[in-house]
Amino acid sequence: MSDDTQTTLGGGEAAIDEGDDEDEPRTNDFGDELGEHETRGGYSRYTVSSLLQKAVRRSDEECAAWAAWELTRSGYAWNLWDRLALYVVEDLRAGDEVVLLVHRYERLANDHWSPEEWEGRLCAIHAALAAARATSTREATYANDYFERVAQERAEARRAGREPADDFPVGDLEPGGEFDVIFDQHTYEGAKMDRNGRYFTVHGARVGPEGESDLGERWRRRSLDLDDREYTDAERDHALAPVDPKNRWTEPDPSGDDEERE
Image (cartoon, rainbow, N blue to C red; front, side, top):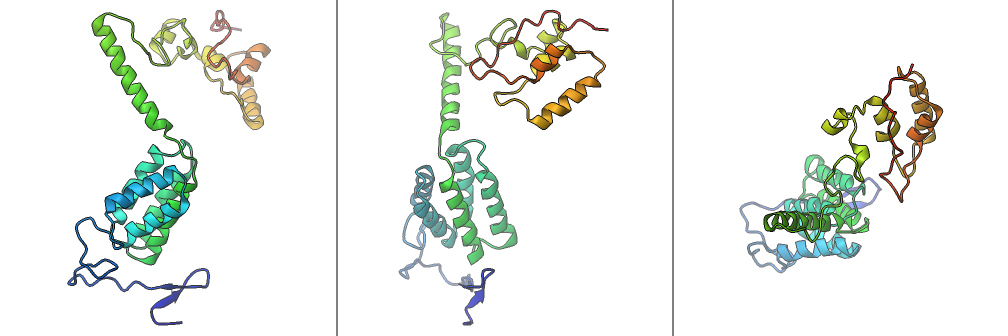
């Protein structure tokens, strides 16, 4: 094994970074002194950063990996991690675990190693590949833009004394409306309607559309057996029935649910 390599975890060899002499000017691959915001390959870091984001959106793994490598080896690892943190919330599907992976790789690159070391570059490449392989969507970005525009339209419509051209998906959120079930003991309106713990248990705590797991349902039924309140079989079944995916907010008439039972 040569003096400038070391054995890696997998048994191979990797070059050891000697580090740049701080007294010497940094140069690009062609021996020219690096310009402001220039990468070692002779590109603008802004251009490479833009490429990285589009590569993540378009699931181009190779371009994403190269962009991460180029930014990191050029001293712009901070820029890479800053942008990846944005991309995972702006360009990827909600709920994807890639956000945790990217965060973990960043911690490894900065806390366990150094971004200037070869291990730091590997972390950057791993993170970029993970992001590029995740499901791409800008749904959160579009949701934010749409809701902002609707808020502006509602305000303008009120000032003009007209009906808005569009509205929030929840309307006015009033008792008796489509979302009546939300008015339980945890809201002022629900408390005024005496919708106590029984109402919440039977109606407000339902999940769906998959419903509870077998284990969750068994625990819930046993818990209701030990509850101070008594529940009918119909109430128990409804409390654990999955929400209808085609009619998520409709509940049976709750009248009488809150009456005390012996």
